[in-house]
Image 1 (cartoon, rainbow over the protein chains, first blue to last red):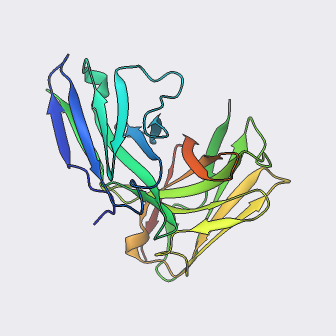
Image 2 (cartoon, rainbow over the protein chains, first blue to last red):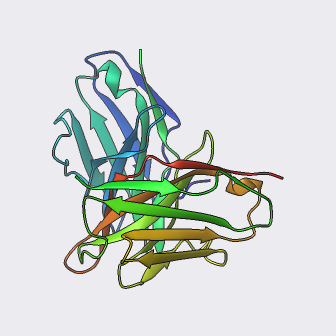
Image 3 (cartoon, chains in turn red, cyan):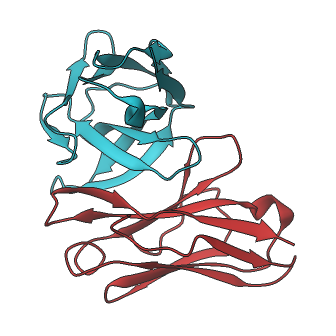
Amino acid sequence: QSVLTQPPSASGTPGQRVTISCSGSSSNIGSNYVYWYQQLPGTAPKLLIYRNNQRPSGVPDRFSGSKSGTSASLAISGLRSEDEADYYCAAWDDSLSGEVFGGGTKLTVL
Amino acid sequence: QLQLQESGPGLVKPSETLSLTCTVSGGSISSSSYYWGWIRQPPGKGLEWIGSIYYSGSTYYNPSLKSRVTISVDTSKNQFSLKLSSVTAADTAVYYCARRSVDTAMVLDWFDPWGQGTLVTVSS
């Protein structure tokens, strides 16, 4: 059971906009930054969003992050087949004194 | 371009100690702007943070693993290492090393980049 809760799966058709949620608590998302990582099949995770809504250079602006209270969301617009991957949210947890990850969401592009 | 590479045995017997090393190239492990971390992923499952270390030796460990984990750093070799004792089948996973940014207040920030990962299987 992960500390951060994500839906196990999400899907969309090419060109659509999809959103992946990440729910936490006051000790993690509520008081710290949220990060999103993309894991393409058979590869290592890659940083997608940092500090709630910042994109590293090279990440398309189709990807956006937001945070409100103890929840966060990752939105992908103009969905493409190459976006098919697992997506993980993460945050520091003050109560646990450690980094916590969501269970991951498998995105399928139909 | 910074690169990280994990190395170590791919098979460890139950009750023994898992040992892995991460070699950093293209940058210095002694940079004041970064911690260095280990994260693992059991087959078909999600990510679990193991711990992080600063070049000075300061560490943070996952409380659920703390009693079995030791992370150390060798600045002369630009490497950091993971030791996990008393392993069981539940420790079978792909183990990743990654660089962790810290802000000016030494608050831990994002993991980037990551190594390619190495599969460690615990079995007799």
